[in-house]
Every structure is written in C-alpha cells, then in structure tokens.
Image 1 (cartoon, rainbow, N blue to C red):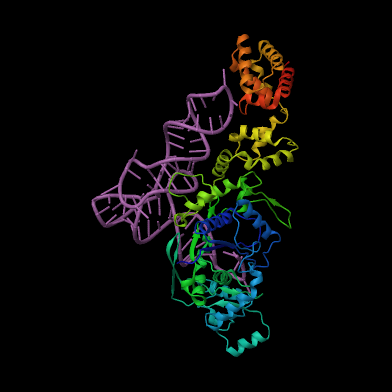
Image 2 (cartoon, helix red, strand yellow):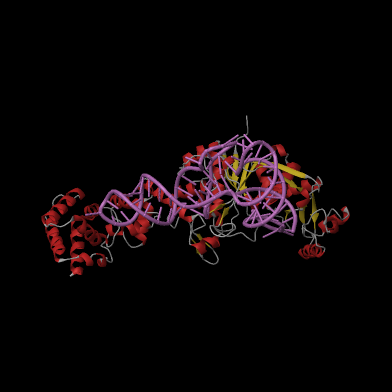
Length: 509
RNA sequence: GCCGCGUUGGUCAAGAGGUUAAGACGCCUCCCUUUCACGGAGGAAUCACGGGUUCGAGUCCCGUACGUGGUACCA
C-alpha cells in the first residue's frame, strides 16, 4: 500500500498571482484529485523584505475563483499547522543545528563586505565561479576554519551568522524527474547555500525540505527555475530525512513571452495589452492596479482550460476540457519539457468556446454587473438571459455582452445612416411608413409573425426583402451587426421597434 | 564565464525507427447567413544545423548553434 498522495503549492506573498503560478497550482491540484490525495497551500513568507500586505489573502481569492481550493492551508486549517513559514521559525533552527552537529553544515560569520571581497578576488583570479564553496570556504570566517573555541566565542558574543550547507566536492547527485527523467548534478558546481539567514529565518532551501517532510508531501511539482537548486534539496533530504522519504519531483516548463525571448512577466502583459495575473492586483503602496484575467472578462473554466493545455495535452485532438475531465485525464508525465510562448489570441478563443458551451446562467450575474457598472440597470434577469443567449456566440470576453447587447436595453446612441443613404429612396421610405402602420396593429408580436408580415408587405410593394432588411437592422441596432432582425424586434417589443424606425426615418429626411 | 534544461509551421502541439508529419489558434479563399457572428469546405506555412548508427531517422547517439533557467542572507 503506497502512501496517500499529498502535494503542495507554496507561494510567496509578494504580489499578483502570475499565470505560471496558477498553472503550477492546477497541475498539483489535478494530481491530488486524481489520486484522492490532499492539496496543501503553504505560505512561504520567509523573506521579510519582500513581504507585501494583502498578497496572501489575494492568493486565496484567486484560487477560489479558479476553483482550486486547498484541503489544508492557513485559511482551511489542517493537521500540520502552522502553514505559514514565518510561524515555523523555531522548527527550522532545530534542523539547522542538527545539520551542524552532523558535520553537514556550518556557521559562517562573513559580513556582506567580506563576501564581496571574496568575489572580487575570485574575479581577478579569473575563476569561472564566484561561489562560496569548497574552494574558498577554508579562507573564510566560518566554523570550519575557526577553532571550536573561537566559534563559540563569536556565538556567545552575539555575532551575526548564517548557517551554510557543506557541499562535498566530486559527488554526483542523480535524481528522477517525473517529466524530464534522469537528471544528474556535479557537486563541484553547487555552492554552500545559506540555510539559515542572519535574522534567524530559513531560506527556501531549508524550509521546503523540512516542511515537505513534516507535512508528508509525496510529490513536489514546481517551476523549472528550481531545477538548478534541486541538488541542494536532495542532499538535505539525504542528510536529514533519508532519500526514501523524499517526494517525487517534477519541474514544470516555463511560460514564455509571446514575442522575443524570456519568461512571461507582468511587464510583457502591460506592454502587449493582456493580463498576466489571475485577478486584479492593487499594489498596496503605489495603488497601481494590474489587470487580471477575471476582470477583463474571462470565465474561470476557460482560464483553467487554457492553462492546462499550455505545456500539456492528452495525446488526442481534444482541446476543451472541464475540470472534471482534467482530473481524470491529466498525466504529469505527458507534460512538455520545453517552455511555451503564451498566445493571448488562443487564450481568448478558449474563453469564446466556454461562453458558447456554458449555460448563460453560469455567468449572467457577472454580465449583469457589467451592464450596471455602465449605468444600465437590469430589472428583468430572464430578459437579460434571453439577450445573452441571442448574442453569446458573438462574445469573446464578458464585456462583449455589453457592446453586443446594449441595444436590447436602450435605443442605439448613433445610427449608421450613411450605410442606408446610398440606396435609400422614396419607395423604401413609404414601405417603412406602411410597416409602422401594419406593426402597430399587430397582435402577435413574435419573430415569425414579424418576418411574415414584413415580407408580405415588401412583396405588395414590389420590393426585395434583402434591400429592406439591412436598413431595418440599422434602425434597430444602429449598425451592421447582431442576431436576426426579427428576433431583435420581437425582443425589444412593439413600442421600441416602432420608435426606432420612426427616429431613423426622421434622420433620413 | 560556469552549471542545468530545452529546440516539430508565426503560436500551442500530435508523433516513442518505415505516416501523404495529426489537430487547434491566427491568417487567406469559398459556402451558409440578404448584417455580424456561429457553422462548413479549402489554402499557405514546419521537423535548428552538421555528423554518425540503420536497409530506413522528426524519432537513437555525438557535436554545433540558438533559446531558456540558475549562478543572492529572493522565492
């Protein structure tokens, strides 16, 4: 019997939640769900300089919007509290001391100035590496070089220090990545990473392994940017808890900017005009707001879908996946190794597909808010839904419902008469005058009846319906767009229909 | 610089030695629709390069190029 699957997402509360972050959560979440496992969110707030107020609550709001709710977290509780690393400070210290006792780590008292001097020296010597490692550590101010009494003296005097891992040279650290297969690192290229900082906080390196062990994490999926520090983590597992208890790793490919090269950043979004964060992020100090996918009108279903297939697919031609389908079909081993450039056009296509696929009641409330924020109050929800049904296949982003549907709620602000004028004549004018009279008397106000009476009248006047329908459309909606004209007339009602025709007729005079 | 990872149309990608190298987005043409969209049909466009291995290589090996990540008392 294998252990219960437990995965985690471990964000730092430093700002907006990036696309790539959401995808990391998604892959973790999917894996947990398909194995009946637990999904944990642990807050990695060990860097007090980068801490941003409100970022933690914001992350949970994003996760909730995406439908990626944790089983355990600072918000949801769980058997391994606390889930905030800043509150686990003492735990890490014990392990750091353990490591020192075992000869796998040491105290380092070097000041920033001394570190800089070391790097300058290495640079002038033409060294290929500027790392604090076995080449230099015996020249530095640490417990490896100092006599035990000297170290104790410094410690007793309260000298600031960090704890560094002691990496042995000439070793190989191999491991298996669920996506990339066998990977091996040469310890000669890895430095003596700081494990415990001078302020007593652990660095990521110590904190992840300690917490992953304590929280019984079985699988660790994270961004590819962590790959180079994997050997440090593996060594730590070996020294502290045993390789047999180590989670299985998977390093996810990066999401790249659409043009040029490099990781997709918030700046690229600003520059190219699309969001990079899941939801609007308001910087607490600058008050600057960065747009999110939610706010520009994405459906969470679409957002999840597009992220899932960015770097993964199930090998079939299927592209539209619901969360339920993803849970059954997702396979971490089929995730791509290479990074994927983000394509906002394709992202919008997913949203368009989901708008069409989902019943409008799933997102009617959000569309209603859009209308109301633009000063159109919606009294009749059923009418709104009917309108949405009529225009949904023309909408890519939620705000499109406003531009595509506004004329169902009020007369068009401008009427494109220049598209009518060239072929307009007295005969057509007379037709519409008669149409008004005819429709005024109409008792059955539905699209089928309207179409019949319209066509009969046209025939009686020896006019082609085709030449009359475009003018009618423009009168009702203001331009050359929208669903069937008679559907529109039927929806907006007799009074509005006639008013709009009269209005344009007057304009045409 | 050093270390790691990667590389199939413009983009996302299928592909596990023998295929006319799928499909999707975007673009173009046509049909449907007397609007726009949806839908349908079609089109242009690809295995980074060089060496091997093999009867045969997008698929395996080596090298090169390019890209990307790391190289912090950040995560």
